[in-house]
Image 1 (cartoon, rainbow, N blue to C red):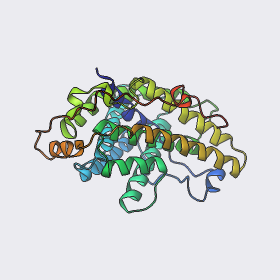
Image 2 (cartoon, rainbow, N blue to C red):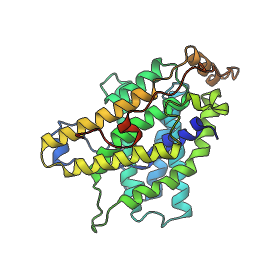
Image 3 (cartoon, rainbow, N blue to C red):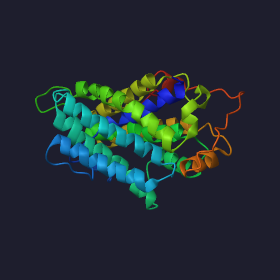
Image 4 (cartoon, rainbow, N blue to C red):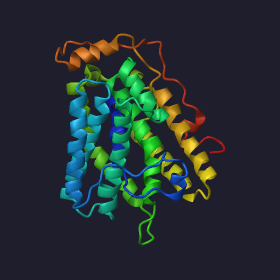
Length: 314
């Protein structure tokens, strides 16, 4: 399967890491930058996931053909996948109340906070600002829009969310294993998500070409591993921060990394393609994908990004 379409899996993948808990002392020192999630899911784990799916579906539907919709559509499919996993393999997660309920609800809240703030004209973190600005004015394809949202959510939001809940369970066992198990949920969401994007938002995805992928030298799996590895690493650093100043330094590194990736993902734009997508989504279905120049090659990833290593000093 073409690299670009495979890469969309990374956009779906991010959706499995989430949290609801009081902010840490270090988070409070940031003056509200790290806040507890607004979505609360008391009760059963499956019931929580169903409510979150409904909430995200409402956002997706209200967006219509807005270019922010592909990311919301991916998120809906991940929640559906999580429901199937919980039903078919109830012992899949060691701590399901953390992985599928508390973490899930807070992670969704991070996205909703950014979405609603942007909708109301309020400031949002830089990675989200890049994603939303490109969605409003850019000439990107639906996969890029989905990945821009995924980048902001995984590389920016996830570290805060993980640190807020805690990386270690009450029994002293690391939660990293459940974090890693999320991959199976995301893999299950992949095909339905790609079909949704192709059917509703962008004709290009039916015949994707790797040249549309700003990080074409990375497969979806590699991209996912890289982003999630960075998210967990930064969460460890947030948790270990001994002072508000140290917490701020880690936070600055998180913001810089996510913004750098957002800039990279938005680098490839094709004049006129926005009209193609909009006509296709609104029912014309006559849009023909506009091919990028064959002279174009993907920009070289900075060494720190390509290797998954953090910038020196971070």
